[in-house]
Every structure is written in C-alpha cells, then in structure tokens.
Length: 321
Image 1 (cartoon, rainbow, N blue to C red):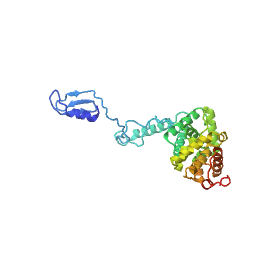
Image 2: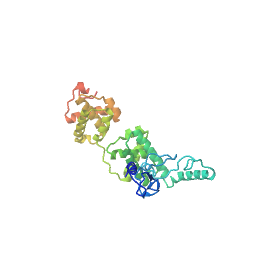
Image 3: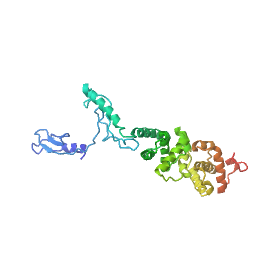
Image 4: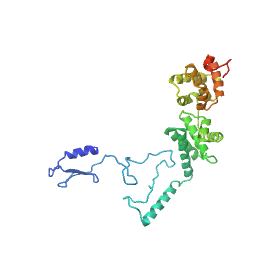
C-alpha cells in the first residue's frame, strides 16, 4: 500500500476501543495509533514509499540509492566518499579533536582509493578514456566496451612500457570496431592528437596480447556515419549501399582501404541520383584525399559498367577532373 493510499485508509478508520476517528500514522515505529486513547490499531507496517537519500546538507536528494556501478570508473563507483565540509550530521561546525579526526579520516580515505598496485594509473587511464570518448562523441556503450578492453590489457601487463594515451586510444579504436561502427586510424590520431605510429603499435599489442579475433572493417560499416555527417538523403544512401555491395564482390577491391571505397560510392551515388556532393566535402568527412576518390570512383564505375555522363561526373576522356 502506498503512502497516499494508506493516509486515505486512515482517514476512514475508526478506533475499535473508543470509536474515535483521530487515527494517525507513526512512521518511525511503523504503527497506526489512536490519538485519543493511544490504542495501536495496526503495527509492523512496512513503509513502501520512496527511500530518498540524504545529502551532505541533510536534505533529500530525490534518489533512492547512490550512483550505479560503472566499469568506466577505476573502483566501479563502489567506494565510499567522505563529503567535503567540517560539520556534523546536525549541521553544527566540528571543534577540537573531532575536526582533526575528520581531516585524518578524509586523508586516509583518499589514500585507500589507490591502495592496490596499478589503481592510480588505471584511474588516470579511465579518466583519459572518458575525455577522449567525449571528444569523439561516442555513446556510453562504446565507453564501457573500451574500458573493458583497457582493463583486460592492464591486467595482463600490456600497458607497461607504453603511453597511457596510446593504449586508451587503441582501446577506443578496437571498441568502435567491436560495436560495428569503426573509425580509421587517421581519424582517431588526428581527432585525439596522438601519433599514428603510437596508436598502431598499441593496437597491435592489445590484439596480440588479448588474442582478439577482429574481422577487417567492411566498407558498409562506415556508410551510415559518413552519410549522417554529409546529411545525405535516403535515396543517395540506398544507392551508395548497393554500389558498395556490388563493388565488394570484385576481388580487386578487397585489398583497398574501405573508407576510400565508401567515399567513392557516395560520390557515384550522388551523381546517379542527381544530388551531387562535391569531392572536397566528402574527402573532409571521410579522411581520404580527393585524388583517392577520383581514382576509386572511376575504377568502380568501370568495373560495374556504369556510364556517367561527362557533364555530371566531370570526366574527360575517362580521367578524373
């Protein structure tokens, strides 16, 4: 019975001893009591109302419990915290030895957070991971996957001798591939300000150390994100997806970088649907050069037997403009 429905029931209740209607609820003892004669009408009542948590100022926070556990925090968010301030539970300032004791406990509590070996570096790495994921605009699920990968790498001592930033960036790169929304090494290295060589070496170390059976990224895995950034219509996206799948059947494109294939197919699809997108704009979003787009879309059009008019594609004698 909820608190509101209980109060309604109490309002209609009559004391069986003195027939008084002055019935009240004692929430501390869990009893329903008659105010006139003191008879306990009900007892052992279980309060099913929300259990709000009190804040450091004594007020209710509007939440039943604390924050949920998170793998993105080094202690999973399960350690206790001594709130700032030098006041007791009643809000009165602490004096003398009580003040000194609280300061000492707070200092010990901070040390206890990193009591085990490697916890401090793990905390720094996970904070850096959260920052990088925010810069990349990644959702929470990607952060959790990247945190799990980094924790496994740290537990197997793969982090030793390598930079934290490189290993965290590599964990994010792997997480994106696991979540079927891959990013390129160039995109992550430029976006996070990390040397591509450091990122590649860290990636190889994690893959070898954890024996991850990652499949090579497919071109169509990049399409939705690039199409969203270019604000392409569904018609262009559908045509580009069809071109990508047809191109991937040709063996000569298996060894090509998938992002170049995506960029070329998007450009071809925009031409075929009459919604042309410039090569310059596509190259800026897809992190490939305009030369790559021209060479790749020309070879794809030739392989698939597509005829693009010179006025629409900007072709002259079969060569890219």
